[in-house]
Amino acid sequence: MTAEQQAGLDPETRDRLLADPGVILADRDLMRALVAAREAEVGDNVIDIRGRAMEALETRLDRLESQHESVIAAAFDNQSGTAVIHRAVIGLLESADLVELVDSLQSDIAPLLRIETLRLVVEPDPVIPGLPEDAVLVPEGAIGRIIAAGRRTPRGDDIVLRPASPVTQLMHGRSVASEALLPIDLGARRPRAMLLMGSADKTRFMPAHGTDLLRFFAQVFRLVLLSRLRG
Image (cartoon, rainbow, N blue to C red; front, side, top):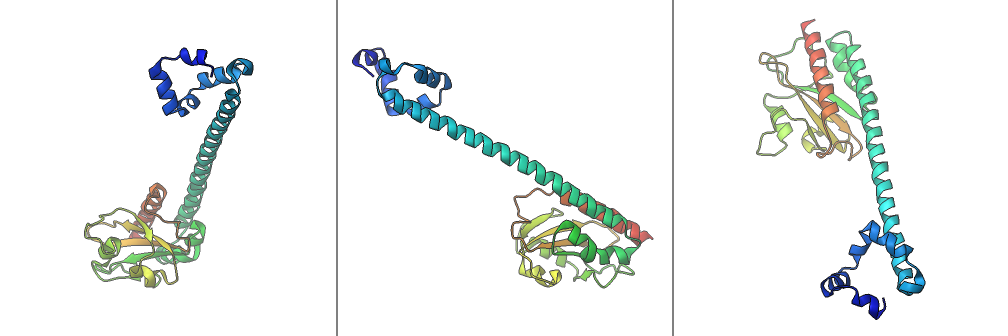
């Protein structure tokens, strides 16, 4: 800027611009005015300002494009996850009896969910008649301890997503990196139960993930299991 142009700014405004010239880049109208100014009048500095303005605009555009791509990816993941759960639910409904329902969890439903393990864990008190061998039986109170996994604060009936715990390693029957625990409430006169999911992908089940689809799957499984028990 020339001395005459500098004199057109009050000292407070000039000091603020010198202290934080980045504020100019944040004002689109001001940047348009600077870029449109004639170089012969404003001097060589306009070239630098224009370059910085273009860089700032490009950065904003890149950020907007990245956010747009993230939104699209999240929407696609949600749609894909919903379709996977729907196929798994259909698999549950197609089971003919209790034995077929429980046995299908690992053999048929787990591949549909794209996970390595899916086990029904049951505390056998009271005993469920006709429960197949593929179900995992644990002592009374064990499910609460498994869900807590060393935590002093009870987790209640919340779905738990976490890295695989040594406590559940034998129940999975194979190596997994992350797991989901879905408590199943069968009523006061029936034993406590839980669905145990395991994945080789350590990022598949993480505490920060949503549980709406898993909760829906657990609710459907509960209704189907109760229906097979009555049958």
